[in-house]
Length: 127
Image 1: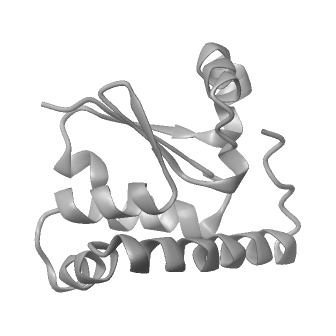
Image 2: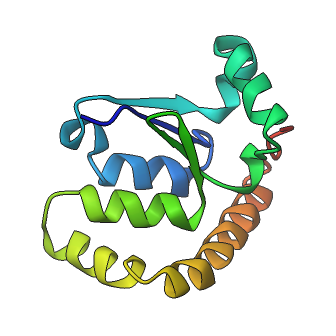
């Protein structure tokens, strides 16, 4: 079984709702969720690893699968493919099974997140 570690922005309503809607912890026995806003206090060594690998948490959702880091569109593709079938997940999988569509969509999703954070006066992640 794969060991998964998902890092997301817990202060972002879109990110938080995505993680909740996917019911990820019910689907994957070995999934650990980390709020990126808590990394400096709760996982400083992990944050140092991310910085050493030039992975910018503020720019993408990150998922570690058995020691390998995926980011952005790759994360959406993998999570869509591993989730249990439902009408919403089938639509999600259809859209994100294409690497091209995922790469096109992810910057739009990130821009929406950044705009929402500005509206809500939530500062961007410093790393």
